[in-house]
Amino acid sequence: MAEAFAKKYGLKASSAGTVPAAKVNPVVVYVMKERGIDLSSGTPKMLTVEMITEASLVVTMGCSVEEVCPRPMLARMQKKLVDWNLPDPEGKSIDDVRKIRDEIEMRVKQLTKSEPRTSDITSVSERQVLSTGVLVP
Image 1 (tube, rainbow, N blue to C red):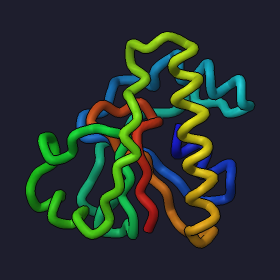
Image 2: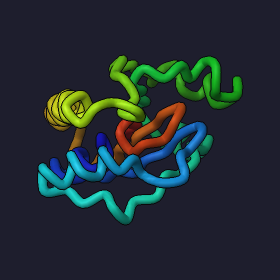
Image 3: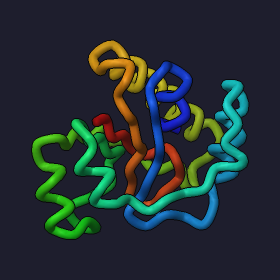
Image 4: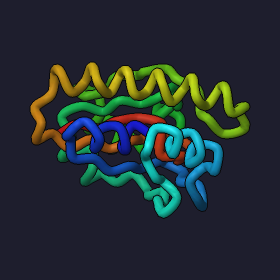
């Protein structure tokens, strides 16, 4: 979701997770469609060292990257790491996913005020659902 909102608000964006899901959460797809954003063709991707190296900011959504990321990857994140501490939408009710979506949108809007429009944003999570974090180079 962070990726989609970043693109909506004029930032380059991609999404990645440390343990990508096989597909985008259908409830996430549904609630994003309510905002006019179609994630149905999205494919979760694996977070790479290159993504982190190119980023100027790594925003996680509450996943414990310290537990799932290799040490070299963590070392590259340290000066850029911010945790939004939001729950994973997986297994949540549609109303809960809407609340998560709205919070992510609000925080991405705040980022667009502080980051240059040319910044790249990438969602990062322990379980990839296209809504769990942001990288801004």
